[in-house]
Length: 110
Image 1: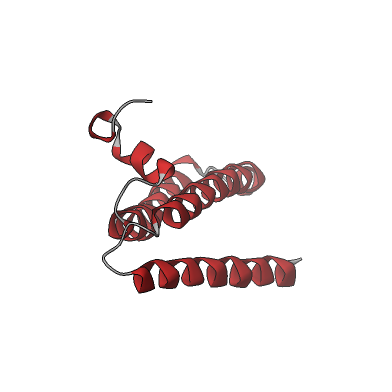
Image 2: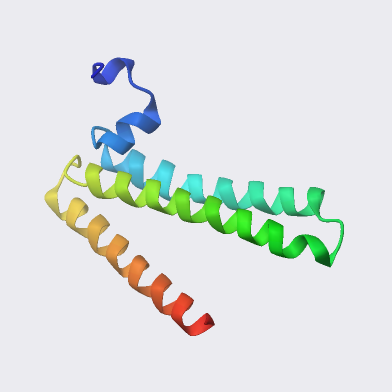
């Protein structure tokens, strides 16, 4: 595999070689907000009527789940790369709690 210097930022996050703050704040938080903003914009631009809801919601669901898997794996793998082991443990704890809360939310929505 290529050295870390030649890998893209997203590849370093996925591989666990990025710093925790980069994976958590740039990928996990800012990246999520960016994806949500893009989906909201796409929804406004592409929506022609109620017939588009199922198609758009299904596509948006796939995009969000794929991004959450990517960001979750990235944060988990990068958690040892912090100035303190406590930050890594906290990041993993927040990630686990987020998954549990999300699963409960999906369960209640069914």
